[in-house]
Amino acid sequence: MMFLRLLCLAAGALVLVAPAALFPAGAMAPDAGKAMFALLCVVLAAAGFFVVGMAGQRLRRSPSLRLCAALLLAVPVVSSIALLSKGGSPALLLMAGAVLGLAVVLYPTLVFRMVRYG
Image 1 (cartoon, rainbow, N blue to C red):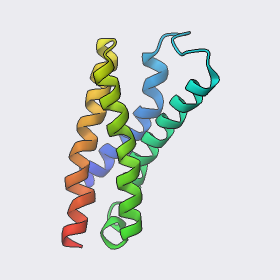
Image 2: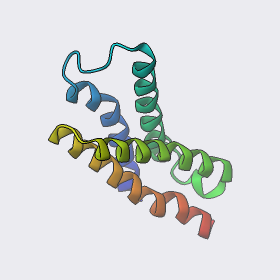
Image 3: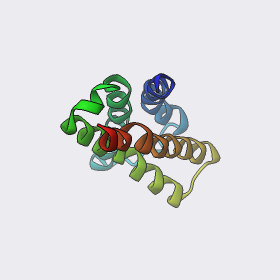
């Protein structure tokens, strides 16, 4: 469990850093609304991993925190599925697949496990 929590913290940091490294300069649309939406998705995705990584054992006792973690982890799942279905560069697909895989592993091990045994 500690390894998954540390992996969550590392994933949260990588989710914040990876979009800047993967998108070349000028790849984002000049539309301010789309740019703000993309930034909001990145921040919410990182927040989901940080909440799970930092809250750890408190997820077992707090139903509201479990709900918050589940909703925040839904953002990287949905955005990764959207990126994988749209296609793109191999590095972008690899990162989206890794984020999706980690989020899918976290749901049954940390979030939903706490509901059943909590």
